[in-house]
Image 1 (cartoon, one colour):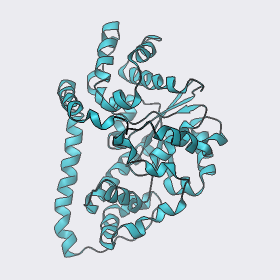
Image 2 (spheres, one colour):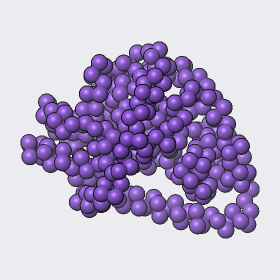
Image 3 (cartoon, helix red, strand yellow):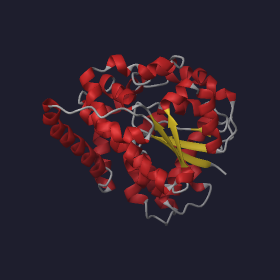
Image 4 (cartoon, helix red, strand yellow):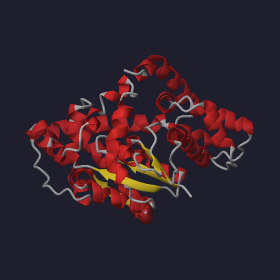
Length: 336
């Protein structure tokens, strides 16, 4: 029996590092990030009649997802075979079969655990478990100041207050799953993964019911080879994965962020951070911060509403938007 699991976190929390480690395991696979699970949910969540015509339409809709189409690069025949080999009774089951199609890239493996990771899933955490109620959850978390450093200095998100609000929202959504599904939940700290990868990975393997394998710690061999296949849209995000694990990177925020940015992140994250084992005092507010807070909060809620509205639109509207985005942006996914 294959165990399905999700890696949930805010982006820049070490999820790609963990993904690459698990892909080095002979019995696990975590495909590249995509959106098709959320993208197809509204149309197929209640579908029970999985006749050949439904499967054909599902596959056509699946390939509107640009990351799936251009990064996974799984042939339609492979997906069709995975969907037709066994009877399908739900949209969730169909999505899981799509994930299994990625196994074709790992033919030498006997897969016991199939993962899925996408930072955006975190804000839809409860929906993800509705789609796949038996899935296990790996909650990946990083010191909010370290995560913020990645967003501010890599993704050029300069509003530290808003970045802190996103970190809090994502992690609070995932923490709800800990309460609802305690046996399916595992907290993994980025700092522990890079400081003591052997013990942390052993704990993850136990959680996923797969053997602990030393090959995981040799993940960089495959990562370096895979990096050459990345498109220009992906390469710039993951350059650090080519380097050996550096424990000092966890402390980089101390010099990369300004004192004001650190203060803003601490102000908006301290309560949730304490729940996750990151303890620091809430800094005092000042006039400038109090003036900025409403605007940062407005930007956060606008972003939140846009994302949630988008994934609740009828699929026909999303399909049109995806077609336009593909026309304008597919070239980014060409190999560098």
